[in-house]
Image (cartoon, rainbow over all chains, first blue to last red; front, side, top):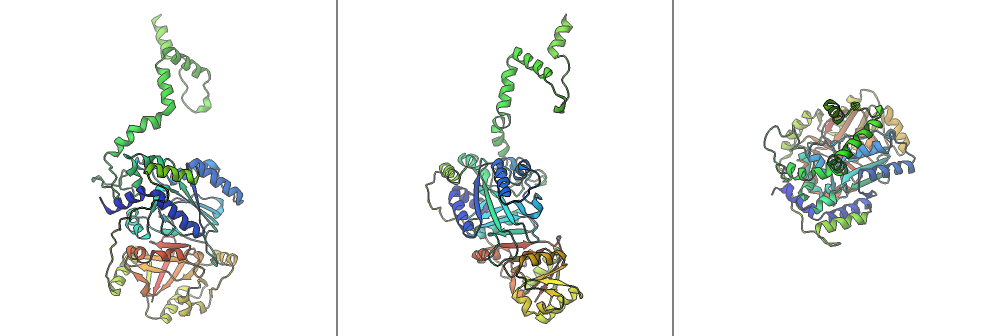
Length: 288
Length: 195
């Protein structure tokens, strides 16, 4: 096992300990740590915070939710090619509030590492950082192993809001730790290792240059698609596919559903209108 | 989901007890470079130039002041309160504004200023990185917010690489609210004056 894989494996096996240490350190340095379970909850929280602080946010909760999902996609989605937008900043509130994604969190130092984000100017009044709970590393020296994997350009280490006497920098720093199904993934022994991912992109299409992919944190990339595909019907289809299957197995119900669809069809759905007669009707008429 | 619920589900998933200590984490492999100062300088020159920065190597505080004055070309600049700038007499140059105590005043001045003069925490020879650490003496707006950054630093601050920075004394990160590693100058023009 490579050293980065060993370190990530150790963190995941003791994740509750390192999260508690991170929280203690960062809170001691003036930051605020919040635990939320989904992008919806994060968007609601940020919207409420902005309202409390009288910060006007452009767009609405839905814009924030989409931004958060792009900043911090689920590990499974990322490994299946969904790009992360960690370096993107959602321009809002005229620079009063900023929502970023963490590349790493350092428990020992209570530090938030933002990679690839251009630093400049006085900074926002309220800095919010969203991070998956798995992003933590034990010590600052561990970052030296992982940061070069990202090839990220500028890197920022936030260790709290502005200190006494500082003339600029955020007055408030919020770290939102997002579960988003990660604790469930952690409980699954077969898939737990996916949480070792540090979003280096080595395995993504176009990154490997056709060579055999070697994941620096030891995720078995070759068997990954099979592992994820096993769950795909349940995750992708869900109740909609079950309902479709139920209707398809009952011809009369299927025909009735088709008639209802025609009767209540709306142009504003933006889809091609169904033909005036069903295949079954045309078939019957043809036989007469 | 509350904090307690997250910790409860994590402990359940991992089979861990509350307050259970972890084993000692594996040590990362850090690459210490036993480079001489001259070797570090050589690496830094190359890497910093590749990142688009301009390096001025000077041998004295007076020479550093002269380079800063040349870059200002009779114009105005804002300077941080870094002790090294005072030692070099840069804060006394005509057209240099410094000693800010009011955040509003600093913001207003930085909106119109073109040149920011500051110092930095250290340099990384291997990657040509400039490491800035923000403190009451080193505001963000001056060090990073302006079109032309003049950064004055002693060559004693030249570390070998990231491993040395993060492995040496990690605790010193907590002494400030933010540390930034600058690996390029696309945002603004950076002139580094190395004494």
